[in-house]
Image (cartoon, rainbow, N blue to C red; front, side, top):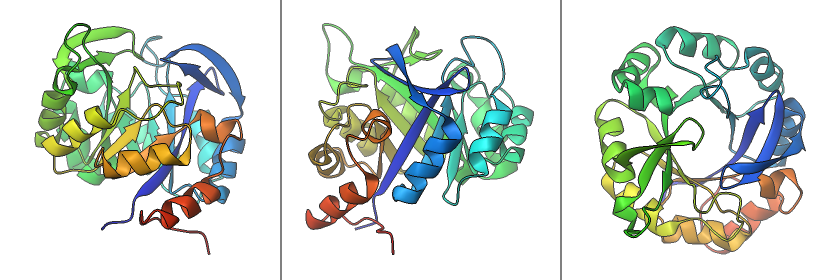
Length: 258
């Protein structure tokens, strides 16, 4: 079995890390550079930085904030939010990112996935999918994709969009369950399994992490290749090192710090 990755996420608004519940009621969690360094030192395999209001505010990514965080890191660093062109992706890579995450811009113009991938490599392109179960038809295959930081429903289904993103050259899928986000009640394993079963590329599960058992479940039942958490790390509910030790005891292969 391949090693499973634990990823710490920094949702950034106005230069500060924030965390909410189901994409609303945001509270301050700290400085991006400080939190990135802390989580990496604790054993996070990767750090994801998402400028969550860039698209809604019709602006580019906060590059100076990205630079400050990147200078603190020795693990892979993904940046998303407000990236609309290959040139804007290049600026984010120049600021220190190893990968970029695109969401709204990819849905608006799917060709962007291939444009960035052909220039920087498919492994550097993550397509983020924010999905919510459809009211009255809540089967995971019917989960609806949202854009602009979870504000706008697209009518597209998460599973079909994940397949298209892979076909267009995405290297990974970052799947966030909007229903589970911030609840700390567990990942949406059914939705994650539906997307994981539809594509060959790695799927990162996001939304709902609260305890170690949730990670065990999403790796086993959700078939995730990686799992992402934010608030449970930022607010000291769990430590990445301790989480990985528990996962190892459960038979989940993870990379431990030396």
